[in-house]
Image (cartoon, rainbow, N blue to C red):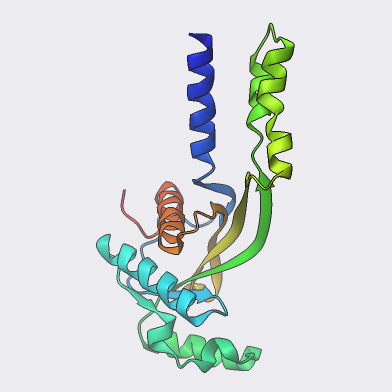
Amino acid sequence: MKNIILITFVALLTTSCATTYLIHQYKDPETGFFESNKLFIIGLEGDFKLREQFEKSLVHAFEEENVRAVKSIDFFEDSFTKEKKTIEELNEIEKTLLNAEFDAILLTKVTGTEKRYYTASMLHQFMTSNQTFEDYYYGNQYEYLREKGKKEDYTVYTVETSLYCICPEKERQLLWRGEIEVTDTDNTKKNIHNFIKTLFKSLRNNDLILIH
């Protein structure tokens, strides 16, 4: 029975590697509930196809929640992210957004990539009280297998998202910023879906944009 419980727990822990987590967040203490009338979505990503897929998925997710959102790819020319902008140029861009009735900007970028290694034997080692040599060796023999090319590592992306208000009375105010860890599943669509799920949960918990 003990072995069944242990195997089940290990399986659950292994599955959890394919999830996303909110690791840090900040909310402006003076901001209560904030509801955007028109949200501008920016994905700071050099890969145009990936940026397009990300922005399209995020806009679609917001629209399903009855939030009006627009992709930066649709609003600006391709040069928007390819050319460095001065402060003066960014001020003009903000005025353009205000004139187009946007009141908030959601900006997302990948800030880090990390390779991690999942060691199932660590769990086995600490959960077994009367551990025999056979138990310990069986749980740690993956070390030999790893040398033969058995893949046990996975990639984690740290994704930072910032929500800015560009309302006339609160220009450029940072309302919320969060860092979300996204585990790579080798499926870009699924990675984006997992990110959006965690992002939306965080926005709801902070009374931002989305209705509970």
